[in-house]
Image (cartoon, rainbow, N blue to C red; front, side, top):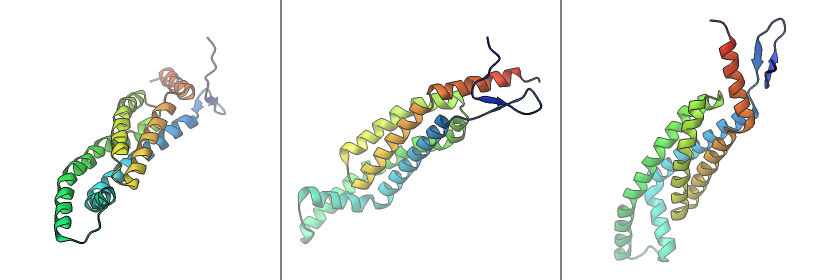
Length: 180
């Protein structure tokens, strides 16, 4: 076996090695950050402007103009009934977003446990995002859901690329070879 350590360079004056973090880990971290920000933003939009988004959505879908008292009352009732599930969806987005925020630094460092948690969390994010894309209450929530899905997929794909695996393996070897 060769003594060559890939993705590392020997520092001047000694046997210590300086490991260079591959760009794939930066891409994974940025993807996770984009996904987390998109999920938090989607939750905020749904919680803050959810009723007005639903009212606008209903008026567009049903093709009515706000004018009569009976129609307005009926729309308000429908909006209140639909806001509960929209609010629940917003709260569901908060958990994976919080986990992704907590994973940012460990993923950047190439921690294997963080990459595994990210891999387990990504299908959840994809399913939640696809659910929001199919309902499409508003274009902004659809855009945020698409960003969350794409960010999570980018993160999970880049954190398992060969350059990342080489870096993790090299870092583990370097830790084991250090005295003490």
